[in-house]
Length: 349
Ligand SMILES: *[C@@H]1O[C@H](CO)[C@@H](O)[C@H](O)[C@H]1NC(C)=O
Image 1 (tube, rainbow, N blue to C red):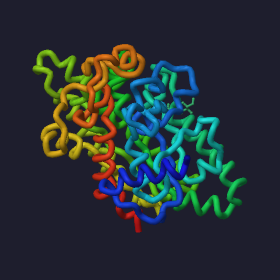
Image 2: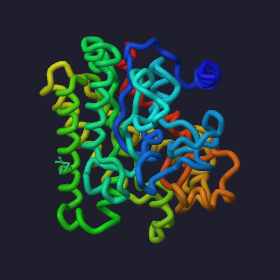
Image 3: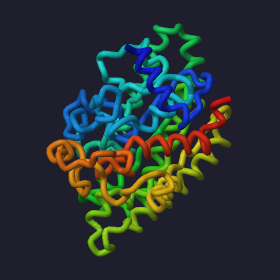
Image 4: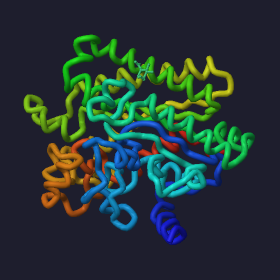
C-alpha cells in the first residue's frame, strides 16, 4: 500500500517539482494550519478539519486534519527533497519515531507566535511545539544513536510557518492585544518571539531553517467577504501589515545569519507569488479567486465548511482557495514550487 501510494504521488508530481536525492535527511515543521497535517485531531479544540469535504482530493479521499482539499506546501516540499510524499503530525499515534525520523510536523491550526493567539481556540502554542521537538530529539537519539541523531538534526530542514492568526484571529478580532500594542509594536513583539524561537532551535542543533513570511492576508475570502466598503476586494490594510511584517522577518534573517555561526537561515516569502496568483489567476489555470470552493465560499471553514458542504464547488483545481481561509492543493503546490526555487534551492545540493 505504502509503495503504491508513493508511486502514484510521484507520477502526479514529477511535472510540478523534480525529485532530488536527499541532502536533507528530514523535514521538521512548526507552525499553524498552513503546515498542520492533523495534530489538532488529538487535542480539544474546534479548529479541526478531519472530516469531509476536507481531504476529498487527498490519497483515498481521506480527511486528515490538513486544511485543504489535498496536500499542503510541506508535503510538496518533502517530496521535492526526495524524502516522502507527506509529513505526518507528531501526535498521530499510528506513527512512531521510525516514521518521524525523516519528517514530522508539530504545527497546530489556529496557533500563532503569541501565546494569546493559541489561547483563542485552545490550540498548541509555539513554546509547546518546541517542547514536543525536544521530546522528538530524545526519541531520535534512542532510535539512531546519539551521533547520528545529532547529524540528522544539523542537516534537517526546519520549517517555521505562522503569523497570520496573530493578526486576523487575535489582534484585529478580539480585544486585548490591540489595547496594549499599536500594529507596529505588535509586529515587533511577534518578530522578537520569532527571533527567540530561532535562537532556541539553533541551541538544539538545528542549522538549516526556513522562516516563512505572511501571505497577502487581506485577500483571504473571509476578509474580502467582510470588506463591504471596499467592494469585496482585498483589504489593503491587512496586506500592508503582511508586507511590513515580512520586511521585519527579512531583516531578522539577514542579522541572524551574521550572528549565529554555521546557521543557514532563509526567509521563505510566499507574498508575491500568492498575490500574483490572485491577480492573474488565468495564468495558473484558475477561474475563481475571491470566493472559496467549500460551502458558499464566503465565510466557512472547519465545521461550518463541513455542514454546508453540499454547496461546494465541483472542481477545486479551478479555485485558488479551498475554504475561506486556506488555499487549495493546487495553490499549495504552486507556492511550494516557487519557494523551492527562490528560497530553498540551496538546500538541494
Ligand atoms: C508563553 O508561555 C510560555 C509558557 O507559559 C512562557 O514560557 C513564555 O515566556 C510565553 N511567551 C511570551 C512571549 O510571553
